Length: 327
Figure 1 (cartoon, rainbow, N blue to C red):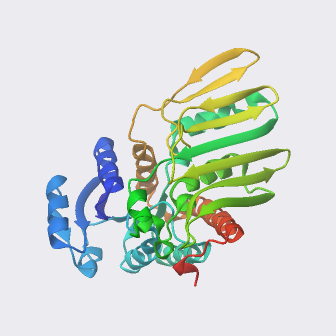
Figure 2 (cartoon, helix red, strand yellow):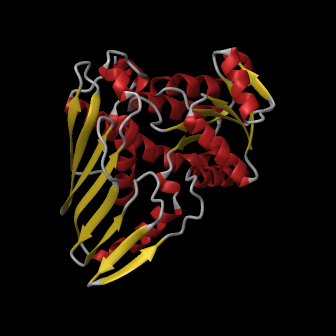
């Protein structure tokens, strides 16, 4: 699997590191609008080629996949153009700005018979699969609490009148898209679509959510998921059942260090993850699917992504958050 990357931020660094750990995925090219930035990034990671011309980049026949890690609002355009150019796509989370965009990408990928993957860690994590195996041990679920807080290094600039992408509705930013997305993916892959969903957000004057809490009503229990970019706290996962509880001092997107299972006074520790770089696990799964040479393997994960995109639409509508892409 040969991959060309779009973007030069830390997540691309992490993705390239994960690719190297697989021993099979090879990053051979990168794209940036600025020639100096592209050249420096290629040198940093010992890449063979760098591009500043989008068409030349996407038409490179040596690339099996394009990995899209541009700002959120640009995911759709980049993924669409890559698919149109005959390239398979790995798109960083959140997949796109809304479910309408994702519907178009899914239809295009099927038409072109190309692979389309969402780079979202949670459903690929060994510890998540193990947690799913153990969840029945705590009996009937009564309450679920997830917290993912991360004070943004760009929040100070935002308070001083600047408009970083993260806090810009035009770039589909905000705490829901950046962090609470992981929580929602975690809940969806454990419990499916909730009966009710509400999002209570602390919004800035420009309408973007700086922090907020999702409240999901399932049959018989409630789940809350909080995320912040304007403050910080410990991160944790806690699932409470009538026969015990599961807890982790980690995030829904990492589950680093595993989790504890407590039942009737008995505490057990579980951890199946060897790699600190959790992007490794999604890449291993993507390569396994690529080896089958059958793009229909993407159908079920894409339907999951589409369902989650619909939940995100509902959450934003509930909180009155509108992106430029919605218009």
